[in-house]
Length: 263
Image 1: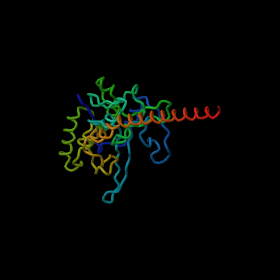
Image 2 (image 1 turned 180 degrees about the vertical axis):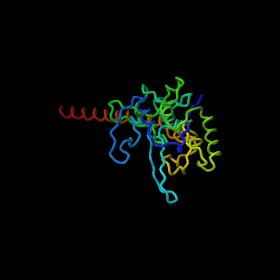
Image 3 (image 1 turned 90 degrees about the horizontal axis):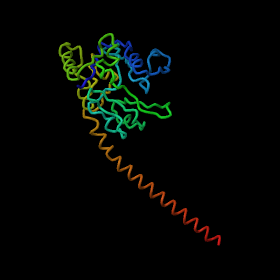
Image 4 (image 1 turned 90 degrees about the vertical axis):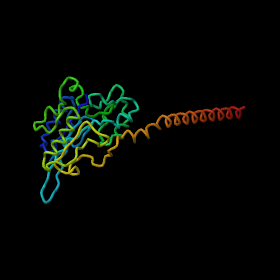
């Protein structure tokens, strides 16, 4: 059964309870933040901060509008990260989660480059670094529980359930909202569809969502490049062996010439 989450931005009050719950459940360490008006909030996602609440304030028709956007992995239906992973470490699970097998991850960062949402992050401070990101609380779902962020949200801004049902609910809310919501379910088609979707009470360009992402499944693009990788690696290997053989032959000839001159 494919699960997902629906995030209603009109209900998010920026309490950041989801951030705390994510850290606690996944045993993620705290990170130093910079001082300022938002000093209590991690400034950006990292290998140790998998979800953040991003705050954007702008002027609309002469009034100040603030929006809070929960960011994290959108768990694409056809993940670009999975398609580019050369180690086979990333998988789209049957329950909807996109997970990383850290026993296989080699930290090559191809997933970071392939993701249209810039989600996977690199463990820069580790001797053997790996890629990290939200796993939709895979173990909680398997145990019949909601993801930690959804279970913690005090205002029901984060809803967990079957993706198809959440998509239907999103459209119902938009239709019944009398113009309260933008007529668009973000994630229904973006990047070929995602398991985490959004509805918004403000234009999407007033949120921190990526409004420039394609509606086509990203692997259709990434595979065109990645399928050339074996040939490129093979060619590089052949070239390297050829250069090594040439270098060894040249060194041998030079040694023979020096030996002949000494006689």
